[in-house]
Image 1 (cartoon, rainbow, N blue to C red):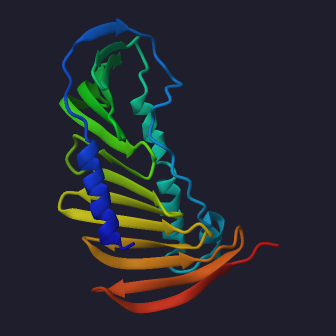
Image 2 (cartoon, rainbow, N blue to C red; image 1 turned 180 degrees about the vertical axis):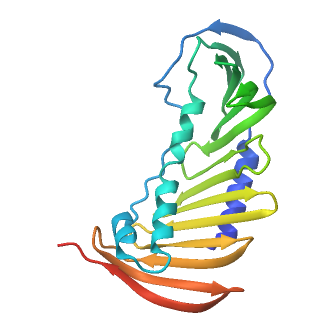
Image 3 (cartoon, one colour; image 1 turned 45 degrees about the vertical axis):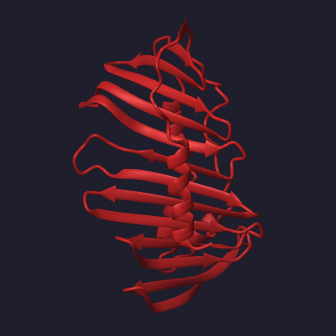
Length: 246
């Protein structure tokens, strides 16, 4: 499946399962819930991280950085769980709205469960780390019930700060993860693709043009593969890489 097809799938998925605002119908004070089961799934990526880190070939260190980052997006899930002062919940149809405060920041979490998908939206009001927010959608996420497609986006209210988009597909034994950074007019995208036999590759794009690529075989922790450097969409240099343990 091509990068562009995957990107279109993820964009459509997020548009379909995006959260709508909710009106208040029933209020029920609740306490913080640190074990709520409705966080997005954590995508399992069996990438050859140790080999990428230690082999020392072109682009493998960068590839390690991005495979590690791809596995840590779930750290944002802490924002999707009511915490701090006791939260108040409002139930409205297929949505539940939680509101609570953390220091000077008012937080609203909207969780939605439709016939086919879950959705989440975090809205900030107040001050966080010196930054003022007014009805600011900080995180928006969605995932199909069968966990085959999901997406999350984070938008900072700070000039020059990167905005992040994550997307993932789990289809036919193939795992694909897209991570996008937007800083002003600049855009970087990393695509990680992993087959059920653990072979895979990572591609890095800068302003929509492929910059470099690293692929790998099925071995763990020993592993090997190829790296590719691109200019204007064409391979300008390439080579093999490998790491052997024991």
